[in-house]
Image (tube, rainbow, N blue to C red):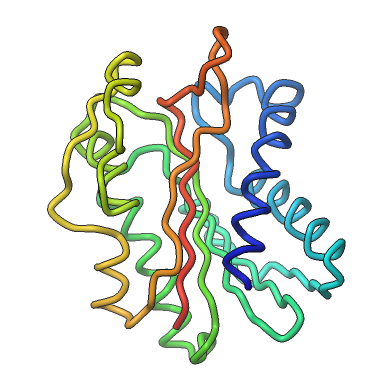
Length: 206
């Protein structure tokens, strides 16, 4: 299952991520990781895992929006095609979300996205005090954290969103959501998950 491959890759990627941020990306706490570095690191982990399972993987850059620092890659895993979108999510305001929608709309209008294709979206976000950041967890995952206390202890107030990422893509593009998750791969000095840092992943099928 493609969903399982991505999930296992993200679980394994957490360790890669910690090492990458510790040794090569000291500014992670200021601006997050650039889509260029995030996509490159994740593709290495996914390709390694898929190859170890006997799958053939071909990855290529399809589109780079220089102005908005957004990347779209195509992944061919055996016979399954995945469009991987890496947007810049320094903030969680409308503009950042709009870039994802515009990317998918471009794939559809240009006739590149076909039935049974997959769309994966991966980005990171550093929690701030804006309402758009406070509602991001709910907007992305479709629900609030099961336990809010750990977030509150780190100064995070997660709020409900009036809409959700999955519902928007289903209504606007007829995409079926297979997975929409938020990870916290970084750790604080006390070896606790750094909950202010979000690694957001979603997988859809057309």
